[in-house]
Image (tube, rainbow, N blue to C red):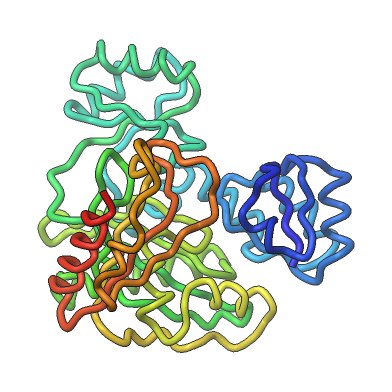
Length: 343
């Protein structure tokens, strides 16, 4: 395994056979990578699609640059979902000053202004209540292309992690129920506590999107649930935070599935062993001292995963805890209690 990552202390690079430390756009570095490997994938959605297209000159790249490019632009992504007959939250593009007023008239407040590109984990979005708020937020974002999206009263958020092979076969993991804090995923509970019809519709919608994109690899599709409506929120062309529970709770985890799809192996079973809950560990936990990992592990059913990142920062995902239980609620209670014991 060879990793290309500009970070000199890349956790993946430290355990790989080789670490090419270079920007994702460095053509000589990309050439070196392309000539040394048999297939290429990405675990980070902001790798430029042009770099993936260049790498495809050397070997298979999965997912392909077309699919990744689509998910890197919120406007294109939401229009694509609507073209597939799926619903999204009401939104309007805001590409320049002249589009702000008509966009606000169409969407109204409260709303969210989101940058069209490079936004994740709560980054690149601001709440707006008025046209003045919108103008200030657009200025704050440097007048780059944005979308204005209506803020909805959500019942909950769910996600579908799926895997699609080169042959078109698609498997889905159990639907996950997600809770966010400050725009960052905080907890995931599986199976999601939603009616079977909602879970099945989410699975079918995610599969439809992957097929239409000709996607190959692991992908997550996030949905808003509002009453009986299922709204597509975002697509993530990679293994996803809400799928980390699969490492401990499923026959085959999302990362192994990514490798299977990459090299053309048959996809593995996605059966859930038992209900599970995952809680994120952010850099905030390190503000005073190293967390007490032994305290979290006082419960023998707790699984602790640390990512090897050396610099903890507020809001940075440093690891996660997974707990299994006889019911989703039991698993969530155990996972939250383990995290609370760290401090």
